[in-house]
Length: 245
Image (cartoon, rainbow, N blue to C red; front, side, top):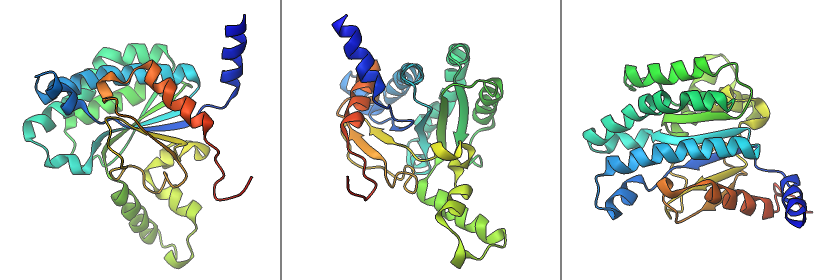
């Protein structure tokens, strides 16, 4: 009974409504096992399924995952080709499970330059989960945060708005995260795995007041307990948004 009371009390503390994840360490994880980098990316795909389902169970509303950045095009072509095949494999393998869990699929990032088969798989998954009402699993694919802001400003200029008079809210409406519900566009918590201590151009505008959580755990080893640890750390933070309590 004591354990039940403890669990119920813990669950009354709000969980982050929007979690961003920089899924780092796939290649290093594979190398540590004497295997090629692509082996790590495949294991990372399985870890993503685990994190998405557990996030849904914990009450997270949006999970934005950094799947492929605009800077990742500098990687070896064989690795890029394999990464571009992962959405196809992911949805083929896990879409029925994600649908059963009431999870929605969405994507931010530039479509231009992505392989047609990759886009088709993402579009199909988004269409097939469009009526779901649970957590939004939002893939940042071919995404760069600075370019996100640049494109927003360019599109604002094309719209005829006076750029000297635009508000933060108006600019936010032109960012790629505008596909998300207005009150869920900015991550409450950003997690980066595998020990690196930077955001690497991931949602720089939206992350202005995000709590940051860094862990040495490589992404393929990031399981339910690891996500719970990140959420628990978030719940300990005192979020003042520049004010005083």
